[in-house]
Image 1 (tube, helix red, strand yellow):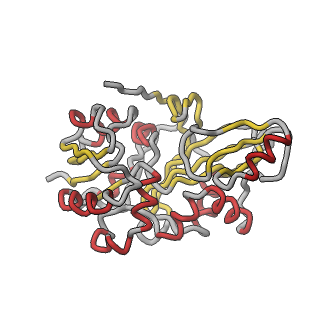
Image 2 (tube, rainbow, N blue to C red; image 1 turned 45 degrees about the vertical axis):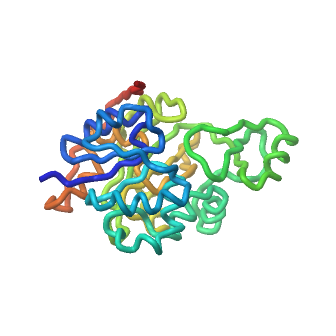
Length: 294
């Protein structure tokens, strides 16, 4: 019998092909606050959910959790809501695959994450003024509401806004790293890829082997207690120095690239599957994915 997993944001435009791929190994229950999309057809079961940042979302998860073995969230607002209400969901600790409360609070607030990195000696773009800077919401994902700043007045404007963080713009090669951590917060595997084409989300990526990135990830994980799938964004500048941009304590929307290359972190949660999995990766290969709009 297939392991039953719950996937949120199932009506997202990049989710259809991912769900179809997951159904080869799992029984997939999809949820989404958006009723329109392909999830009703692509999932084994689909349920219309309350918005992830509302009070109704918690009792909804309680009810639907009875249908599945594991739960994976794709939306930050859902994770923040679950994190705030963990005391109401103690019986679901083994089903909900998330890092501990402190780790999520650090990673999902970009301002808190910035100060955490500075204190712990992790390379992160500075907040001090420079010729090219980026302003982005402290809560947010993708490229939504991100602004390039090229003068002091704009810098000072966003600097005063409590819901934004302003950082130096780093020119270089962007990497997305899909990671998997076990229940003891130890790194099981990490797979970097170069973001070749993206439009808010990755469209074309190249899977690479990079020991320097893997060492960077291990150093970061020594300071934060990660559990389950984690997505990390990095930039390598012209001097080959790595800078961390953000950490998403969840599966990435572009996890399909890693799955195609041979690394499916969700397989770790398959019933009766050995945990010491050896991943056969196709490195230096370029992968594409497509949006699916009903």
